[in-house]
Image 1: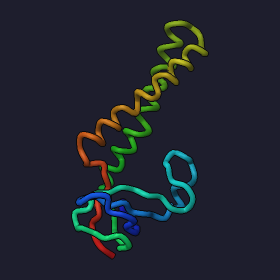
Image 2 (image 1 turned 180 degrees about the vertical axis):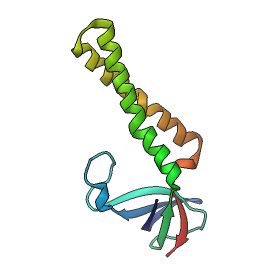
Image 3 (image 1 turned 180 degrees about the horizontal axis):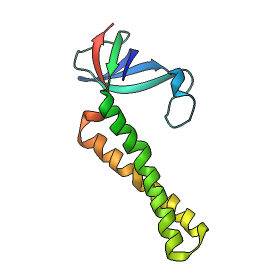
Image 4 (image 1 turned 90 degrees about the vertical axis):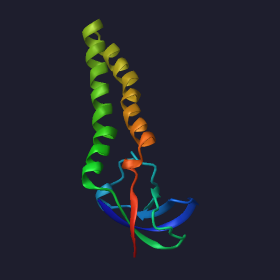
Length: 129
């Protein structure tokens, strides 16, 4: 996955905040913090860019798919596990739903750990435009 953006700021060496135009395929699902037509993303900066420069930012497709699975698939599975466990233990759909909702945040823990331990899910500036 490759996108073009504009560097907005350089908070520290090796990092940059880049502004991207929202991709029409992205839609307005509300899952990301982007508002309006632009979104800001902090990326790795091996090139030493300056604010105002146009850059190409990339994330390998395989990593993008793994990151998507961590963010979408794992929480869905923990939610469904909670629903099933609650229903099997009590026979109540309401308790199952409540337990599913309680389990949902646990599904985000692997994504949080993966992004903190290794920067491999962080997009990287690959070229100046």
